[in-house]
Length: 113
Image 1 (cartoon, rainbow, N blue to C red):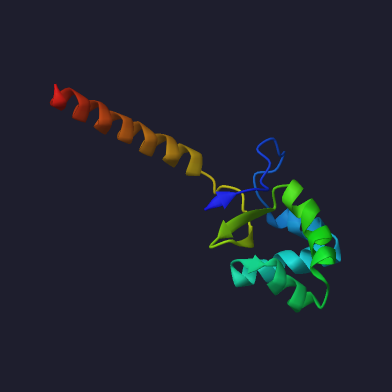
Image 2 (cartoon, one colour):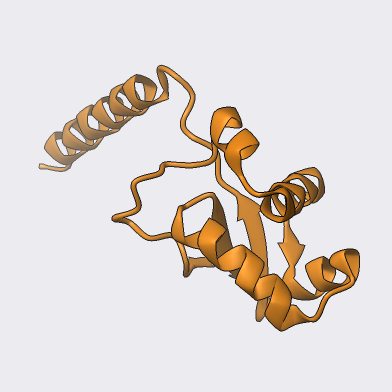
């Protein structure tokens, strides 16, 4: 699954509840609908909003640029998903898991010798 639109230099690491409340009404509606669907294609959104795909894409673009949505490709179809900020403590958990993996790999390497 390839990610296209999430900008690594984006100041946001996902959409928080506070940021959701600050969005313009049309973007707020789009985000909530995608969130309930888990993912949505451009065509799904166009049908739901009764708008053409170009108009929907203009609504999505600022959300993609801010990192609130991510665009993925599955079987040649582009889908949009809401990105959420990491939960508190998640980065610590990830560091511990990475440390454990590194330790296991180094012990496997020493057993191969």
